Length: 279
Ligand SMILES: [Zn+2]
Image 1 (cartoon, protein in one colour):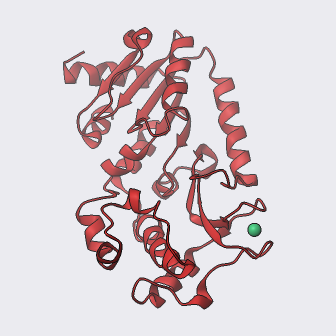
Image 2 (cartoon, rainbow, N blue to C red):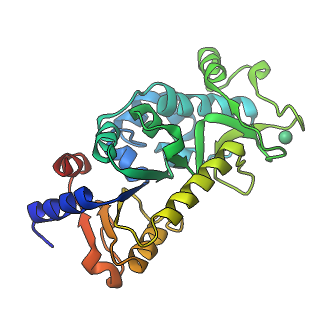
């Protein structure tokens, strides 16, 4: 389907007729909403860190093995603050609220900036499966509790000097006394607390209820970093449900499984433009 307007019309019809809508969101959605991890937004905010460590973007820098906790938290405080606290709701996410407003819907997202909640989606409709910038956890995951970090992050930033925070601000696990970490799934120690499991259950219930129903899967900016979470399950569910439609917005990887070709509508065009086109 090459004709853009035709793809928009077919998508709109599928969305109007759908009983269920499942949104799957990846990094490409946040990038399209303006939360970019490289370029000017990165260089404007991380100047001293770029000079000190040679960082090139916010994604690779988040894997940097800092030598001390004081350095680690100076960097992470800025990273968390920029992406979680300094930015408000963005238009693209707000438009998605409007798009699904009158439907039975659910959202699974690998993004960790809480943009869906900021845009007005109720938190019980959103499963942030890979964590949340807004919380700390024990680095070794010794217990399943998360700790809100907003005021600590603000203090860390105010007290940062030469890319380090003062030692007395370094957070320590209240149970084992070890270092703390951001609640992001980057290794085997990722903490899934009670709230994570409740979201997981709501997601599974939604999938159960929508089996065989008229459903549209909208996949937004999901690449191949962790395809087993959204991309492959969406393809599989589309394949197994003859009433399903898969709408894929992906500038780099619009392709779909051969078997789903007749049920998939792909867009490589500007994501904001396409979402506006659906409304
Ligand atoms: Zn611990």
